[in-house]
Image (cartoon, rainbow, N blue to C red; front, side, top):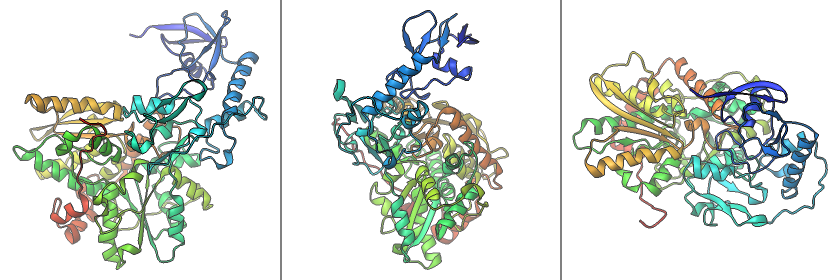
Length: 584
């Protein structure tokens, strides 16, 4: 039982758990203490100094994010002295920061800009000292602009702590300190997996997604191009935030309507391709699970950041990886083959793009030759949820007042299993729904697998399929993955029983709903709301299992023959290459 203590915030009594920071205690009584380096996803480390407060009776200012409130203390969060110190800290940061807000990708959504407005800063009392540092645009996914960096350290904490990637670090000392790729090399030469969590946590415009919206606009203006769009599961419960809606609000129908008003010719849903992924991946799993001597566990392959990480650090695990492409890439291959044939359109006349919650999806479309399974680049462009929101606003579309519309078919209808791909545990649950049917020939009465849901970093369970035990594990947030891989490696090395039969991995916390391209401001509170929206969408679907999607059944009957067929492998599967960053 946690020890509780009594204290005061600005004279208001409060009872909190011992060890609670002053910052969190203040929030409990409705007081907001400003901060730039602090983020609830990360351990506090008191870098920026904006959150200073007073303990009554003490001459010192303390940093609220990293200082626990003490029993009997009365904390003063705001008085003229505190406000003046905070304003000076902001002014000093601004003295080393460019003033090109109008050209910054975070204009209007910048934490530093917001603080400057809140403190009423209208002039610069300190001499300007903006360093000239080169832009790093070496990756196809994210851009690092060190001139705008305020040295809050969030990106480093995320990359090293949350993600265990170590692609970013502090370089230099004193006034010469800056953020750069580890070893002071370009990001693309580091262990960077393009997950974009650094950009999602950056409070300013120092790291941001590479903007590809101009390519979509050009395609729409090209009268010869047949423009096709697909939207990912997680986009439908987050896009509304860009228009003032509550996180988790399902806006699928409005997304379809907005795309039509942009002039898109065919609107499909990546959820359909998630159903297709399940047909291929569940078939692969059932074959391995029921064939003696097969390589187990099977490890999911939907997340391109995880694929990138695996090839760099777990090359010995490649035989365990599902060869199924991600839903994005499966849809892309179907658009330029199956759909093109049905419509009588030449594949080269199709411009295919996706709207994804993920910056790494930008990298995935040119990952290797398997992303050209149609004879050309299968998917032309990826834009993030944030980029799509900007396009809607730029086009003058009144998003909130759009009617709900339907997607186009034959690649638009999806099952509930397709939509839960957007959350951690969703791929596992969707696969189990169909694997049960493939093994038993029967339908599940209850399709929910609660044991693989939730924000716990590593979830494991034993599933009973009519007397057959299936051991599964789910990991999200890259920093949690290594533990599972160690368990598998140890079992293989010692000849022990494998700990799991099937493993799902997602690079971002919460799965794709917390992706690096989603609207800014993700916290666990917001992630939980997005997750609830995804499960609500699942529960509202008439069809809850991928194998019962009638359009999936037609696709196999008319074009792919059957799951795991030769044609399916040509178009829907990929391979992996051991490419260690460092000599083993």
